[in-house]
Image 1 (cartoon, rainbow, N blue to C red):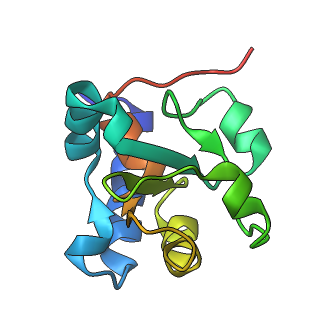
Image 2 (cartoon, one colour):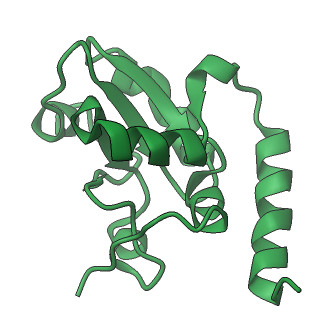
Length: 135
């Protein structure tokens, strides 16, 4: 039987995902990202746009993600990104809302595919994918 955390995370992810007005090509599912990271991790550049506190917090972040809190200055992006045209930049936040707002800003600055993680970290946790927690 699911615990209260699983039920709350599921309800929050469903509501937040349903409220987004994104094209499917703007998103990557947690399962697809996890599989892609396992097969070819160099193909992805992960930008976690949550606050530094969220990134370092007890819920952690996706291993290999770069903390780049949103809103970010345009000057912050070139320093955070060293992206080739064959790579995919994945924006990550808690639920998918902050990452959605960052799509256009990042797309203007890189010659790579840019997507956001569908459902954010809530959906990543629900899929029981690995997380790293800062010491």
